[in-house]
Each structure stands twice: as structure tokens, then as C-alpha cells.
Image (tube, rainbow, N blue to C red; front, side, top):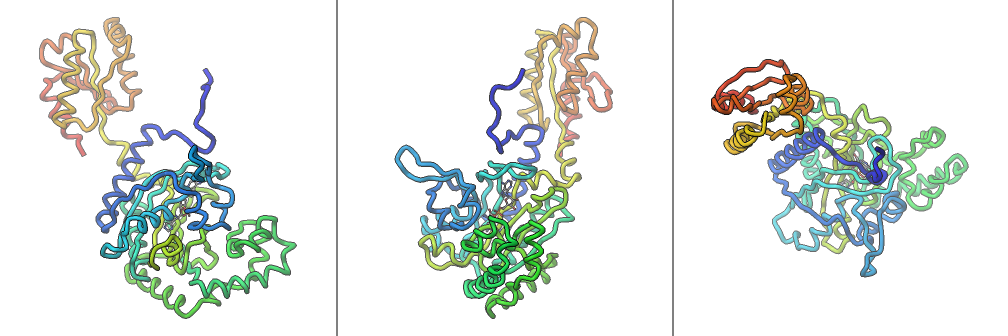
Length: 431
Ligand code: HAM
């Protein structure tokens, strides 16, 4: 039967067993971030539209065409958050966190919304794991968030990820570069596509991001930002690179890396992974020195990143996946109505005394009949289909004798034993 309703385009249901991976990744994120002194913030999914227009920037793709914006019943313009940095800064100012000892280190995990064309690794509702360090001190703050980021990815057993690093300079560097870039591109306008011609007016730096071969050709001769960096920006970037090197963090310089959001100053970075096709960035971030002021706070140095959790899960190392998948699941299956009570109590006992890591109570019409008809094979098949590692069968005879049958669903070995023996045996499979 065809389903009448489907999840809206660009959104999806996350289902078991995949959700176990999500939970494990998030638990490790919390553990690691807290170890580095970051604490969780949860901001609303909905914000005033103006926050993003100001924060992320009018000329960006996000604000220009990707926001889920609407007028609510009270006539307010609101938007489903397309990212979380602007909200975190809004909360920082709103709750007077500038009065707290600095830096304030916050992390978040949750859905974001962008009306983009869905494709592999790109969704309209996607999920980010992010961290923001607010009120920190320049290059040290930049290095600190990168250290945290790399530590987290190591916990997930990643090895081959590439950290791409660049600087977009401070305001004065950028103004100088912007003029040089526009002066170079203006006479070559005919070789640019429509979107880039528009960006020439609104946000010329973003043209550098183009993947179009003809535009790339034009861009290959374009001026470089690094030749327009102010002295302060040059020193800042050199300092960050030195700190990362001395911390043993490997990175690649990526002079053409510009980010799709307007708030960045100086350090920007992305982490890219193989195996994701064109949407290969699993993380983006950088420093933003002006945003908090822009939102009404005191000038505050800040830096952060957001990992796209959907993409991260997609490329999780096999070793990590296996570790999660082999967690022992046990199902308890009553055979015959009289034993149903016994099975339930065993289930309750297993869960309550923590002996079983995961324990399911398993009931299915017809099981007892199959069993009674001398077709236990069918019952075993059903049990195997649940994905559990062990099944504990509780038949009426066994129940009377205080015994159960424990079946290893992988090796298909089965043994009768007392309930206590079964619980003891399963203990060995705790992580
Ligand atoms: P962003 O680069 O726009 O930065 O997003 C960060 C990550 O979110 C991307 O690298 C990607 O993995 C994931 N992502 C973005 N859009 C989608 C999508 N449509 N589908 C799936 N994944 C997606 C930010 O959002 C900044 N707030 C990061 C930041 C924090 N900068 C400073 N602090």
C-alpha cells in the first residue's frame, strides 16, 4: 500500500538502528565538549527574521533565498533558524553573559532549516553540533576551538579528515581586497554567470567560492586576499598557524576558502571528507569579531564552528559503527500464554537489575502456535529478524522448572539453564 503522507521534501525520519549512531555521537560530543569547559545552550528554533538578516548578512544565499520565514498570527516576522551562531550571540547579549567571567564557552546540538535544493548530504532540515567561544582572546581562542574540534573527531575514530584553514582578514583588509577584486572582475563580467554578476554588486568575495569551470578560469588570475591583509591580520593568522603546529594539529592552507556567511573576520576553516560528493564539508567555522556588537552588545571577540551531523554520520569510520552495532541486544520471548507472565517478569528483572544492556519484550501473534505445531525454526527466524544477539525463550515446561532456553542468534547455539544462570551469562556482554 502506498503511503498517503511522506516526510516533507528535504526532511527525513531518522530510524533505528541508525538513531543509535546519532545518540552515540551526541553523547561523545557532550562528553568531549564538557571536558573542554563548554556547556550546553538551547536556543529557540524560531527567531525574529531580522536577527539573521543582520547577523548572517543580507547578501548571503542563506538570507537571500534559503530561509523558512513567515509572519506569525501576531504579525511578527519569524524564521526557522538556518544556523545557530546568531542565536547564541543574541542570547549572550540578552542574558548579560558579557558580565560573566570570560570567555563564555557554549555548545549546541540540534536541527537547522534551510530551503536548499536537496541532494546527497544536503537537506532542508539538517542537524548541527556546534560550539562558540565568546569573549576569548584572539589567536588562542581560534586555536582552542580547533583543538576541541579535532579532539572530538578523534574520539569518533576519524583519521583521514582534512582541516582547511584560511584568513578572510579584518575589515580594512577586506575593504582593500574587495575593491581590487571588483576592479579585476568588472571588465570580465561577461564570463561570469548570472548569480556571480549579482554578487559582484552584493557580495563579491563569494564569487571566489564558485565551482563553475568557466568562472574558475577567470578567477585563476584574480587578486589574492593574502596580498591585501593588514599587518594585524597577517600577524593574527601567523599566530594561529604557529599555535596549531605546536599543538600537533595538521591543517592545509586554503587561500580560496571563503565562507558563505558574512560575519567572519580573520580565521576561517572547514573540514572536508572524502565520500560525500560535492557536499564534502562536514564542518565550517571561524572567528567573528563584529557580530556581537552588531547585535547590540559590546565589541567581543568570538570564534566557533558547526559540524553538519547528517554528513558526519554518513562518513563515520567503520570501526566506530561496528562498536555501536555489536552492543548486545536481548529479547525475551514467551511461548504459550501461561508463560507470558514469567517472561515479562524476567524482562523486568533484566532491565531492573541492569543485567541486560538492552532487553526487549517480544510478543507476536502466532508464536505459541508455531511452537506448539513443532515449528520452532519459524520462531527462531522471527527472533533473528529483530536484530537481537540473544533470545531467551520461556516455555511453560521450562517456567515450571524455573528454567529458560537461551539462544545465541548468531551461532544458533541454544542451552537450557536457570534464570540466574541466564542473567549471569548475559552480564558478560555488558560493554
Ligand atoms: P555552515 O558552513 O553554513 O556554517 O554550516 C556548517 C555545516 O553544517 C556545514 O559544513 C555542513 O556540514 C552542514 N550543513 C549546512 N547546510 C546543510 C544542509 N542543507 N544539509 C546538511 N548539512 C548542512 C554555519 O552554520 C556557522 N554557524 C558555523 C559557525 C559557528 N561559525 C562560527 N560558529
